[in-house]
Image (cartoon, rainbow, N blue to C red; front, side, top):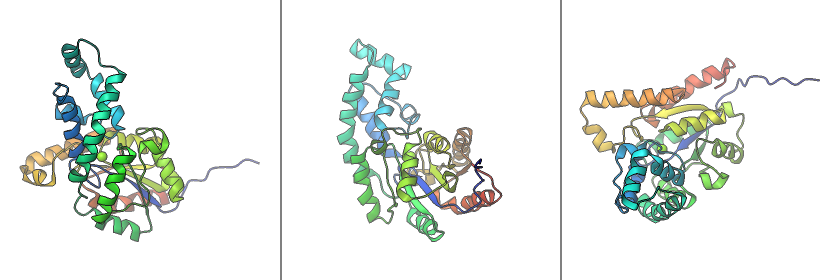
Length: 275
Ligand SMILES: [Mg+2]
């Protein structure tokens, strides 16, 4: 007897939300400041653009990627007469942890409108999962802060919980298991970075990119509002293009625009389409 996998024709069952730049910390500012500071403490200035290229991956991997950028590796060699190695990754990461823990509590307010969106998602019967590039101690600081501001997902996982971070899909799989949600095509992954989109694609979920509140625009809500309209539109368009090129099924400005995208995805599911 042969078994045939039938296309799923049901409704969405869960969303999996990113943290910084998607649900908290408009502009994903907290990690940038801390990464720049730990390098500056070693006499190496790193630019905001350099800091933002690999945003979203596990922070130790992010530090390693920065050290491997040719310009930064060269600046390091000039200053220390040796190529940066794994022990430098370890010591920089050791510096990063306490400073990021301190900064997180101060710099990660819930993004305006997020509690309302999440309530609407719950009203349509969806579970709320989450993944991040932060470590467990960092996430444990964020969780009560976010809850006190009205945002408390059903599941919150970090790379430490599953052995590796984005773009690998393990955090999404574990969210699905803990929330008892299947199949993966009934799940939508939402985030503001390329690694968020890759994580969702690797897991086999639908993917939605977020621009305005995230890492690509890289501005606080106030700064973003202060931008001349034409410049803001251009930046949003650019961020949208990058996330589309990464493979995002949809791209929205903020989480508040999610409802109609979920309607469209459900329409596609009901015709038997899969991500
Ligand atoms: Mg993010």
